[in-house]
Amino acid sequence: MSKCKFDRQDKEGALAILGGERAIDKLFMVYNSLGKEEKQAAIGVLETGVLSQFIGGWHEHFYGGPKVREFERACETYFDIKHAVTFNSLTSGLISAVGAIGLEPGDEVIVSPWTMCASATAILHWNAIPVFADIETETFNLDLKSVEANISPYTKAIIAVDIFGHPVDMDALMTLAEKYNLKIISDTAQAPSAFYKEQYAGTLADIGGYSLNYHKHIHTGEGGIMVTNDDEYAEKMRLIRNHAEAVVGSKGETDLVNMVGYNFRLGEIESAIGIEQLKKLPDFVMRRQIIAEQLSSGLKNLLGLRTPIIKPNCTHAYYVYPILLNIDLLGVSRQVIFDALDAEGVSGLIQGYVNLHLLPMYQRKIAYGKKGFPWTAEFCKRNVNYDLGVCPVAEQLHRETFLGYQMCLYELTDDDVQLVIYAFKKVWSNLGDLSEYEKGR
Image 1: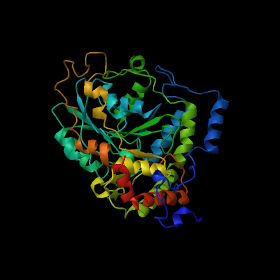
Image 2: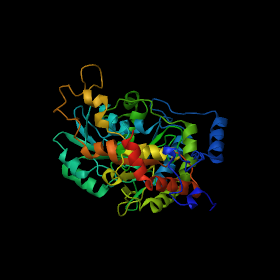
Image 3: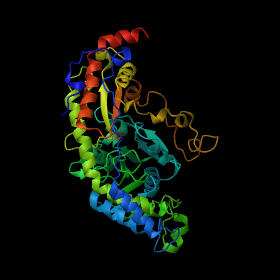
């Protein structure tokens, strides 16, 4: 390892936010999971002249072209699952999954507020009603006590999000689902190749899904993969993906529930790239795990900072490296900690995450049109509460105590990781100065 600033004493100089020298005076290499294999695969598709072979009717090409099918078979093998269905985004995949489980307008689906907005809008898409349950502070996944407290006679499903890369407690969740006769959809966008009890996260639910968006571990630019062991759900997702209403008659489908179709199809170039990316996924996730272990080793003794918790029988894919701050112990606000780290050159940090229930759409209950549909429709069976305070843990985390490092932004070397650790230690060794700085602002 080369000799650099992190070999020095932490208190060698003033913080950069106070006019001192930055701890990190370089730009980290941007993470790029694409290589020559993906380039060759894309060129190979271009040379065929077939960029998509989907036909939106009952035809031999209804299920797409050769690369789409090859990618789906490769995903089935990789995730050890019966069916993989590709989409042009995981958002499209989630919409299709919610439709496939047969929701009726007014049905309720419990979901985390601590996730990307599509996890909830996929529910609204079918005129069903999102109900937000709180999260727990260890993995930031759904708090199952809050989930159970939010189950009503109208609850039909739960969308469980494996946030930041850590799987939800699927055994407990499936026990809850069996007790109340609920379906489970796993939004595993951020946790591809994470394990829950020796099975891939996302494969234990009725339907699971992974993102292929450009800033994930692997990507095709945009894209998503839904996985299931249920033949009926898989076929319904394929129909919704590709103009279901135009296909069901010729195909001989008699169950027309939610057979409103779209063009949610993934192209041949993206699928060819996905085939190559999938081969690299274990190595990409392992590298993030190594970086996370280095960070945890370096940061574990810092006052008022909690490194990630990994539950027994789970692995973490580390889309985000989650940190919890104890503001009372630090004597400094998260904003000032963030500003100080940013000034030292630690880029890629995020403060908080999101509270979906506090977005304008849920606060005003306006989605379709001006009159509050679907919440004001006759089929909406009760008044679901989205007020501030319904998810207190998520709200406090977002407002005060959560700090995350985005692990898929940069390709960090071991030296880069040590520089990040050094910057944290430098800030922490000068908390008194930061406190005075905050008082004087």
